Image (cartoon, rainbow, N blue to C red; front, side, top):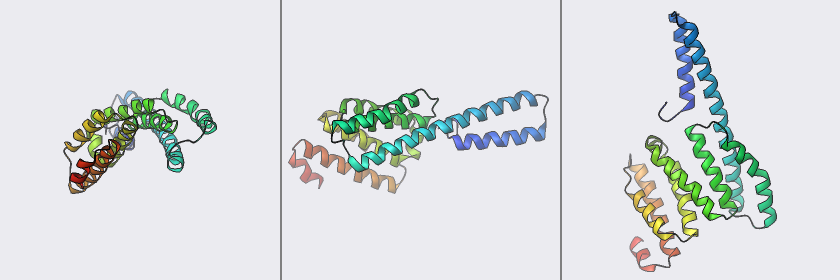
Length: 211
């Protein structure tokens, strides 16, 4: 629970330890209980912040699904006015590991909607590094990881950074997977990415081989 900072489990452990402490009643009861209470407050704060980051991510996703890109300077201005202050506030919060990923995702969506592909790439790359730094979470949340790779590849292809695209797809194909379902999902996604990559480069021959 500590390694992946899974807050619901950490809260449950906190409660169970306090119940046990009330049964044992050691001489250090006061000091230990104070520590558990402080720990509980920290967990609650991180849970609230993580949910705030998740809420903002869902708002961005709703806009992204509806519009994909913004079509005018007026829409750009509205987006900046609505979300720039929220992103700034979110950046200052004490975030859990998941909250940190949501923060990067929010910034990635924000700049992707504004068609600032350079800044979007920066934040989607941060998510890629985040997954690399948390392999346990990458195994547990493989389908979220796939979506993260797709977001990153999308902005790289739009920026015509084909060498990076090829490298990321190759690294993805070399990941050890847990089961048949993950191998199936990985094969489908990787095949789609390769098709998009070859189409973007106008490279027809590999498409035939891939099909």
